[in-house]
Image (cartoon, rainbow, N blue to C red; front, side, top):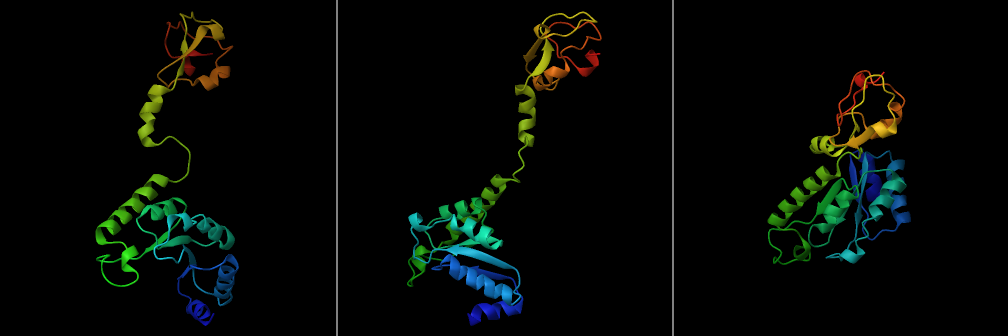
Amino acid sequence: VDLTAGVARTGLPTIMSTGMSTLPEVAAAVERHRRENGGPLALLHCVSSYPAPLSEMNLRAMETLRTEFGVPVGLSDHSQGIETDIIAVALGAVIIEKHFTLDRRLPGPDHAMSTEPAEFTELVRAVERTRAALGNGIKTPVPSEIELRRISRRSIVTARAIPAGTVLTRELIAFKRPGGGIDPTELASVLGRRASRDLAPDVAISRDDLR
């Protein structure tokens, strides 16, 4: 209690790990921090087993912490490998704490479940790739799709030759690739209009072709 209150009084950014804690215990610690006007706070979900089995990692608890307390969350990871860290990032972790050792064969309680240099390097790269793959959440075609979208989508085209002045009906119209012309979803804006010029068969209809 004194430690968390004392840290809060410094006003410094604080990272609080939650290993072995219940949600009410975490809530009490967060309340002490806020009561002392503590600095910015982040909470780390943690399973304090060495190593922590994957079946007990309960990574969705990060979502609970973020929802309950409205703070950035992360993972204090005691599992072996890097899979849980990648999943944690995909679930919104902004901090990953991982034990590091030069050699897992060294004596001591933490070395066997720690990350060696090569694996730590791969962890950092995997986290960067995961963040890149997550994107911004806006559903829209990405740059690499634009040309394929143009080729794959369809346009409104003439099903046969259409003399100038003809009223366009569904029988005179077809939908064909590529896209780039009037989209078939806009068919209603074309039907009933008159051709402003003679239109050859199997050509895309543009707005300039309508009156």
